[in-house]
Length: 181
Image (tube, rainbow, N blue to C red):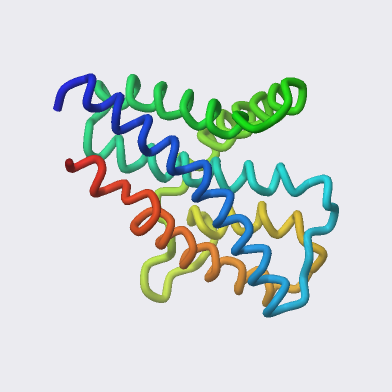
């Protein structure tokens, strides 16, 4: 695969990710509202909720890129991918909010990348425990944004995150398909 082709794929996935992750964040919030009458605790934190969802999907793309391209080709791909996500996510914002959003997105991405690499599994193996799986730990982050403290809701959020993330990666971003093309 040529470097130019990799860059084109990184840009395509970056462009798709912004809209897809924003839609996924909205779906998660809508489902929590419909099923459990749960809302986000503080409306001002909605952009950070969306950033957390974007960052999860950025990390999931990174995992697949690493598997497909290897460590040598991963770095230039991910550099362009992150640059594209930042550009696309701030495109419609005025300069000050765009700078703040972009800086927050980059900071959260850098912090979560280090955290998320510790979680080898997305979901537990059959009859395994949720703790230290990526979707569980991510669900706990999102759970901190909502006005609820029930462990049952957290478990339901984890299931919702897994379903929405699978659809996002396979049907919206089509990461595997793009990387193999």
